[in-house]
Picture 1 (spheres, one colour):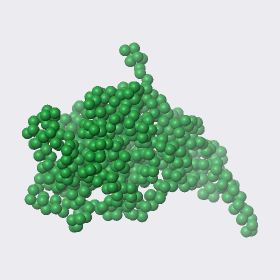
Picture 2: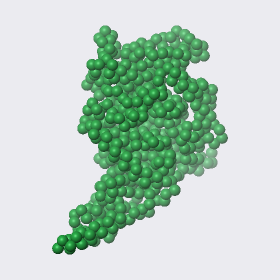
Picture 3: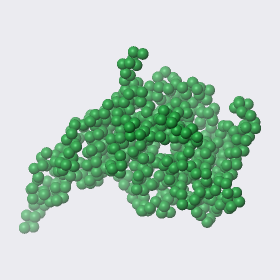
Length: 614
């Protein structure tokens, strides 16, 4: 009897192994084995209808489209009823929309108050204004230069705007050379170039010892400051409004430098408190103070700094410039900042490491007051600015950094973040953080198999649409890439503060709305569980169309979710001219979570017949 059982077990095991090879990604097929149907040789007839064949990976721009979809319909006809319908193919939008930014539309912005720059803030389209078409690349669009060449060059056909090369010619922002732009590294504040300017800063404060990792650059031009900080292992988020200079954020991202459309206006910036080690420019100092880390630096150059030497060239009176600088000095003091140095064209202040002394000062001079401790300092999505100083976490030791000290870079990336040590992120502890890092080691190893270009420098600008603890971004640090870690405002855990404590960058976002970037600015988009999170909140088609807007031609998408959701998503994606494939979880076919890999096909918009005749 034991031999019979052993023989039966061996036959069953042989069937299981054979079926595992056949089924590939189909967790639903495996369900029959789990229920014991295989042991009784009772294979349902419906199995013969299931398309469980293995397909090649669409891991490069030359991959062919998956002609046959993974078919799970036979187990639940109602649940997969819509997959029987014809795929809806989306038409290209008009070519005039090739640089469309949904929530930073200039015509819509003109309807809003100009006070505190409200008209330049996010104002998203109404339901009647939503677009259900594909944003077209310009007719002469080319795949951008690879990093590091992209720091210095971009194709003119990708961003056909010469305005900055004329308007900022003296300042050496950008030059047109035949069919391409060249970025010499100049800027309004650094006529000798960004590299020399940063060297000047490094002589005044410690830039290269790992203590400064994250920076924010306000009114960034074409982001040369951020581009050259990368040589010092400092990651800057550059931001500027849509309509100050034509396409400056678009130029930054085309160069492979982190940037986002935004402005210091009436609302908080979309970052948590204590996010940045260094802030460059930006005159709404109470908001700069909120996002600066304890002990962080604020750097100001240009008017009114060194006004005694430059006032004639600036075409302003000495009295006016002196009054402006005195005002800045007064505000900095009211925030309890210490002026570190003013030398030449640079002035640098430092935020205190805690508020012990500041609270004592505020007992005498209460303007501006310290904000209520009940206010969530990390809350920043459509939250109005308040005329008060954001309080630092309490500490009784004058030598202690409020909120917890950070490790120097690069140890910071994998050290347990202070917010987790202090228990400020509910239900996330040190052990869970370390486990998440191990999970991502395994996931990245799997991704390298299904998307081989991941480790070859193919993807420079990457977005993680649901970043959680930033594990994906941290695991990508060894490659010549950077990741914009997005924490959805609807996520159960608001973890963006943890991400910044790791020395990574990111932003808040509601994915029912457009993202604050130009079209075609990311090489790769990653998202885990995003569509399940937003399934009952808004139209998933609009989220996918927004992904298509953001993604460059021949860009790659990697989505993790349950197979039912991915099947729904895949149908929409095929209608957007994406080549798609669903593959197994890194743990194998038994895991109900699967991975959708997609590649956006290359196509460009074409001028209308009318424009050809003009």
